[in-house]
Structures are given as structure tokens and as C-alpha cells.
Length: 154
Image 1 (tube, rainbow, N blue to C red):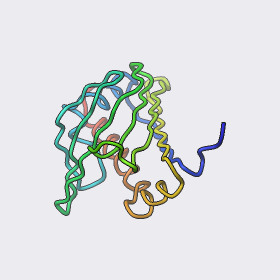
Image 2 (image 1 turned 90 degrees about the horizontal axis):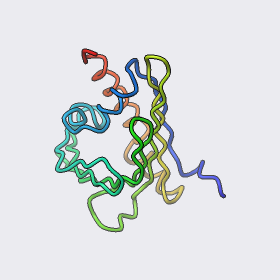
Image 3 (image 1 turned 45 degrees about the vertical axis):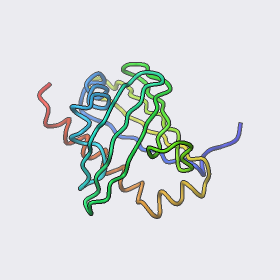
Image 4 (image 1 turned 90 degrees about the vertical axis):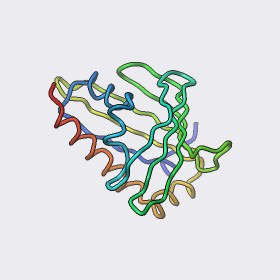
């Protein structure tokens, strides 16, 4: 098995919320619409069916007015521990599509979330990082999730 290190992005964050809540906020569109995406982005969710083979279709609206159609196809859904999915734009055979694994690990009353994104090529990963600011965007998204969770009463 070959290494994917040059093709991947990894984000790990700890949230001061129970794992089941973090899972629900990640998988329920009534929550996702409030925190998903980098600063300044909003979302229109067309469908979100979190099950193996299920589809999540949404449009991210950039602060400059640009719309970014997205389609996620879930592969594995093991509540409240693991999600794996393919993420791309809403076109068939998207060359920029990538694989995502999200682990939700209980740490007492907190949750450690690890999101691993693996791109088809190193070049595609580099484009996403350099042109679209994926590392900063990922960190902003996790910060928005942290703030959203902090404002919930649980």
C-alpha cells in the first residue's frame, strides 16, 4: 500500500461537546446550514441523506456571490463514530473529487474530530490548498462548528 501523505489534508479539533451532539450537528441539515464552510459562506442544502449510498447536495454561496455546487456520496456511516464519503462538485466524474474520512472520538465529555481528505493526485491537493485556501478554509469551518456548539444548550 502506497503512502497518501503528499495527497492529503488532515484537520483535528477537539470540541467541548459530547460525541453524539457533534455527530448530530455534523449530519443534520438544520444544524449544518449554520456552520458549514469558511467565513462569509452560506449554504443552500438540497438534500442530505446520511446513509451508505446516500447523497448530500448543496450549494456553497461565496461572499463574492459565486455559487459552488457540491455533492457528497456517503460510503460508510457508523453512528456516532465514523463517516466516509466522496466529495466533489455536482457533476459526474468530477476530476477534483476527493475521499473524506471523519472520525468522532469521545474524550470524556469532549469529542475529538479528525477529518482526513485524500485527493486523486498531489497536484490536485496543491491546487486546492494554493488556489482555494483549503487549509485556512478548513480551519475556519472548524472554528464555526466550535462556536456553534458552544452556543447550544446541552
